[in-house]
Structure formats: structure tokens, C-alpha cells
Length: 307
Image (cartoon, rainbow, N blue to C red; front, side, top):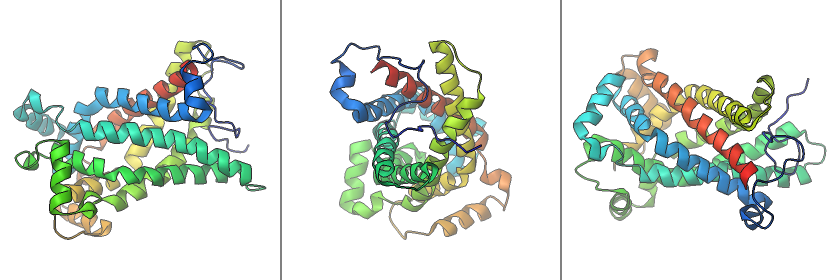
């Protein structure tokens, strides 16, 4: 049996519809009409990401400390406790801006690229065309790497005394080091985004097809949550070493731009050549990704029906 992608038709439409011929829950001429058939994918992706970030940001901070310092989760939580409640959401603005935009790009550009490429693909297999569209969308997301860069600096307690907030961090990097410094860690981001997008959009449909058939709106939300969560968790583990390299590279301010391989070898030596220590934080990342991408996928699919 041929592998199906999430969106088997050129017209961008969510697979998670409540049924054939399901109409929008908003009246004609409402938000869906204003956004247009393509624009709603960007809007729904953005709102889904906003919901996810506000819920999971504290978990992300614990995970970041584990990736950067190789400490256990208990010690990472203690560090956050010492930082105080006022600093718990310190650094949320960069991921909020970055994630709401990148997820909008991820879903929106995937649909746009798929539509354009399928119209011009000729006899090229649809699976290949959609995979290429997913890779292009993931690569385009990397233009927002500066937000991940600033988030890393604001979450690293070693820089608390130097950087006050998002705007101050951007001004400091640009004035003292230039635009290039904002893109430190770009290579691991590119190596992560393209392949992960291909796998996410390529497997989302087949995974949902294996779940029990939903007969209610709540059932569809549950299926979309499980589908997105399982994919996000699996991809999070697969690309975890790249995120470790990215965190280490982006925690540096100024100095030489070191290749990914060199950064990875440095981390490997510091953690005694232990695979378990390299993947320290991966368990929390698994559960965070399970929750995050479950929320994103379920919210996105629900919003597509609403608008």
C-alpha cells in the first residue's frame, strides 16, 4: 500500500474534518472569508503555537537548563526556584514571537508550496512533491533563528546580569557584534527543521489513520492530540543532539563561530563520552514535545473547522 501524506489533494484542507461536507462553524463572510483559503492556515498555526507556549514554557526552561549544563531535572528545578517566580517567565517573548511565526510558516508555507508544486509537478510522485514542500517550509523557518538565539541568552542564568529583556538583548547583539551574531547556531537549526518537517507532514496522515475512528468533535480533538503528540515526541528524541549543539553554540556571545561537529565533540568530552549524559533532558523533552505538539496539532485542526 502506498504511503499517504496528510493532505492528499492539492486544495489545502485538514484531514481531521468532522465529516464530508462539514461547514465552517462561523457564518459566511466571517473570519474564514477574510483570511482566505490559504491565509487561515497561517492564522490557525499561529494561534495554536501561542496556546502551546503559554502552557509549556516553564517545562521548556527546565529542559533548557538540562541541555546547557547537563544537570538532572531536580537540579534544574532548584535553579529556577533560586531564580524566583518573577524570572519563571523571563525570556518568554522570544519563543512566543518565534514560535507563533514559525508554526504559522510551517503550516501555511507547507500548504502554499504543496499547492504550487502539485500544479507544476507533472508525473512526479505526490509523496516526493509534498516532502519537498515540507523541507522548503522548514528551511524558511530558519530565518527566525535570532529569536531562538535571544531566548537562549535570556534563559541562561549566566547572562541574567547582562541582558535585561528581549529588546535589550537584540540591541546589544546588533550594536556590539552585528547581524551575524544573531544567527549563531543557524546550522543545527537548518539540519533540524527541514528533515523534521518532512517526517511530520509525511507521517501525520498515516498515524491518524491507524487510530480508532472518531465519531464526535471531542474524539477528533483527542485523535489530533495523540497524532501530533506522538510525532512531536518521536522527532524530539531523534533530533535531540542537534538541540543540545544549538543550545551550547547559542549560549556563547562573541568569539569564534565553531562548526557543529566541533561543538558536539566538546559536549561529548565534557560529558565523559556518555550517550546517557548527552541525552540528559531527553526524557523531559519527550514529555514536553508530547504535550506541545499534541496541543499544536489539536488546536490547529480545531481552528481550521472553526474559521
